[in-house]
Image (cartoon, rainbow, N blue to C red; front, side):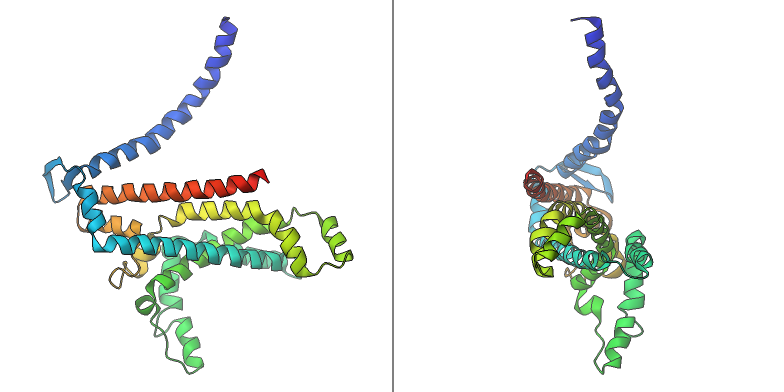
Length: 292
């Protein structure tokens, strides 16, 4: 093998090595430490009393009464938010895709909630919108002669879903709106000339064109929504009871409330497994869409 051939193979590997090393440090090392801590007894209040725990941390996490509630709440929050944002984002994208006065300002206003920090978003909904005494929704209920709802106490998980959906709806709307701009206008005009109504165009033209963007939106949202924490911590603290506790908040409770790093690490391993199962399922769906 000539020196030139060796150099041509070595140089790309050399250039890629910083990225590969950074990826290993950023992902593999924390994962290895998480698995290590999940296999030992490690409480922050007793840092000297450590030892091999085997599967006891996993068993303690699984038998925790809050664990099943956290898994269910995580999946309900995930599915509900994705459904609301995708359906709502699609509807809004189709509406603002048409030309009308002030469309640029409307687009800017629709996108702006996505740039609000999660904590600010939660505080906004908690005090301005959902407060049972002076909140906007309470004033609306009172105006119609109804008793205001204490959202965070009576409907805690649904309240968190509303907060997160409000913030992620602009993201779905932006992606789908951008995709609609790339549609062939001549095909739409030809369909109208052939007598196709709006539902027929939506079913046979818009949806097939938006299949890939919708899959991408779902995958990106799922990645971030599996680790929702700020909204729950700021508003409900996982309560009442465990009604709004998701897996991320349960891990936080074990780590920084109970100071049990071993059990919290076991919960983190479960979260990684759940995230990978969902990711594999979504990748297969997106792969099928890309093959079409």
